[in-house]
Image 1 (spheres, rainbow, N blue to C red):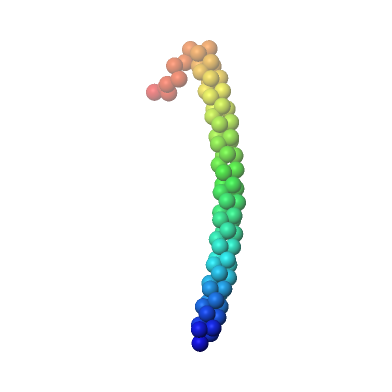
Image 2: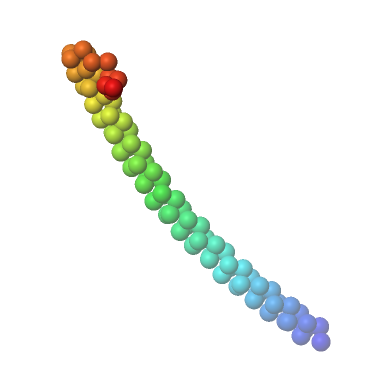
Length: 81
């Protein structure tokens, strides 16, 4: 009877170990997928930040040109009434 109980306990422990290995592998895969998604998001945000910085430079350059033209023409930059 003791052998049967011991065998049953060992079998249960082996099943638990197998199940835990499967769960850990699933968790590892999910974590890797999340890391891949995060890398993709970070790359996209970096691209957006680069585009935004470039557009800001272009806007500032245009604003400077407009200011120079207004200065040459003697305009104040305020709309006429």
